Image (cartoon, rainbow, N blue to C red; front, side, top):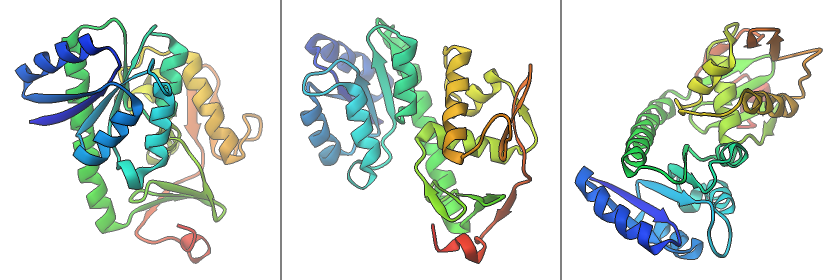
Length: 252
C-alpha cells in the first residue's frame, strides 16, 4: 500500500480522489494549504506528493522549490504536479524545479493513478540504485567534470555546480552515453522516462541552461556539441571510478 499526500485547496477533489485511490490500494491524505502540507510531510513521510499549482499562501512552484531545497527536512519526496491550464511553460518550470511528472487539469483520475504508480516505481528503482552507488562510490569523470552518483552532486574544475534535478539528470544521461547523438525525443525519454508533451524548445532551453552552468558555448563546446539537424552529443570521453583524482576528491 502506498501513502500519497495531496496538497490542493479544492475540498471536493480531495474527497473524490481519496475514495478513488482506495480501489488501487493507495491511501490518499489531503492538505488544503502549503503550511498544512509541509507539516504532514514531516510528520507522516508520504511515499509521494501530488501538488496543485494554484494554492493559497504560495503557489505550487514555490512549494516544490522549498521541498527540493531542504532535503534534510523533506527527504527525496517524489512530486507529481497538477497544472491548472496545461500550460507548457508551467510544465517546464515544474520539471526544472525538480518535479518528477505533471498532469494538466482537468484530468481523468485513472491517468493520475497511472502517473503516481509510474513515479513511485521509478523512485523505488532510484533508491535501490542509490544504495548500490553509495556502496560502490561511483563517479563519472570527464575533462575536469565529475558527477558523484551517490550524492548526486557535480563539480567542475574542483568547484561545485548548483544544478536542478532536470539539469543533473540531463548531464548524467549525456555522460553515461558519451559520444552518442541524442535527438530531442530521446533526451526527454532519457530524463527519467517522463511522458512529456513539451515543445522542442523546452529541450533546447534545458540544454542551453546546462551549457551556461558548464561555461560551455555552442560555437566552442568543451562538453556538449550541437550536431546540426540531429541533436546533441557529449564530447569528451568519460571514465567511471570509485574515487576521484586528488585535485577534485576533497571537493565532494
